[in-house]
Length: 77
Image 1 (cartoon, rainbow, N blue to C red):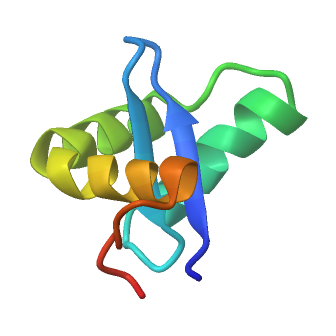
Image 2 (tube, rainbow, N blue to C red; image 1 turned 30 degrees about the vertical axis):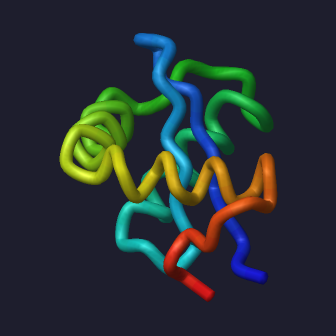
């Protein structure tokens, strides 16, 4: 089973990506800033994740459904 990174953007959208996706490092930095350091995320990471989600909404949704409901394959298996 693949591992995923999940980020809730300031606009309320949630991005879910496989840990091997190129966006994962920006998502991890975002999570570290908000969850560990308790600081606002770097605006560049917010913009990168938002742009990635705009282009990969279906992929993010499939990964999200896979990890939450275990009903679909997300394509990373």
